[in-house]
Image (cartoon, rainbow, N blue to C red; front, side, top):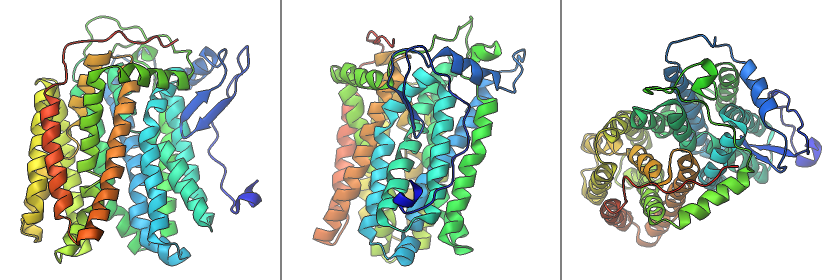
Length: 475
């Protein structure tokens, strides 16, 4: 098999054995999105096996939810580092293999699209097989796929490893994981937790640019690949031994709960059916389309436009690439503050008002940027302001999804809403590049994106709050 593929990939780290249930099933572990084709079996025996591997005493009375957030934060940060790697390795791959920028960009774009589209299926897999199984499978897949690229020799292997497999893997360790953790482990401060975890995904992508560039400067592209792969693999035992499924596994209640909250029974529904059922339910709701539409604009105006074209825009105005990269890193640091603060505000202020403010200020700043003074100090003000608003939309968007669809169903539906974010990012990345090629300037792209953000600000006010739909059955 390995000879037929053209390279020899290292074996992934071993996972605990799965027990076959009474009617048989076929379990595919694809980047952490475990999809069960059978309707019987594969349930409690494996969950019990995983629970017994915990190294945390059940008698512990300390609120363990804080440690859960720390573990998930590290996983999200590592996945963000993987997503940032292709941008750093683009030129070294071009020189080493002679591949065109278009080919390498296609692999990166494939990863971005699958990163978004995997979300709802990952959320369904977490309900069916558990968070630990899904996250460990995703980390194993990402680590193995990254390490296998050390032996790649052909462009299709790059697309497979850094596009398909890495994209699906990172899609399991993304916003849907944050939503699931917040809903399972917290009753109060959910917005704050969601903001902190969301910040790790976006901040990690930005701050890893200079970190990975420094490693590349003192080594080769293979050095970067090995660091990323080993970092992902190191998190697998941490998840295995220290990440319970529910607070009840430790004899605890969710953070902020006044009464006992027994762990819900594991879903026995097929994850594919759950994911597509959530899409069908959401498609009948006006709130779903408003949330998905505004989040599409969020992706269009952040990593799709600024994250992809900011360095090129600065280069057009005579700013060095290293300086522009430092501005992105600055945005990442302030995003950690802004998104966490946004979560704190979401627990206290109407989320619709927050979205109105975020999209409105973002739109005005994008319209202003092409006319700004393109010096490092002139752009630093924009970097600080825009960084605070980079992905502050995540906590209020999730809060509105919880209100509209219920806590049990919201993570899966939020996965589809998050997919629209990545589609918006891909749209902006492509159209802004085409506009720059046609007109020789980014002016039109940034002004149009600013106007669209202002429209999203108005649309946010029409999202209903305080109304819940009847959740779909999960079994």
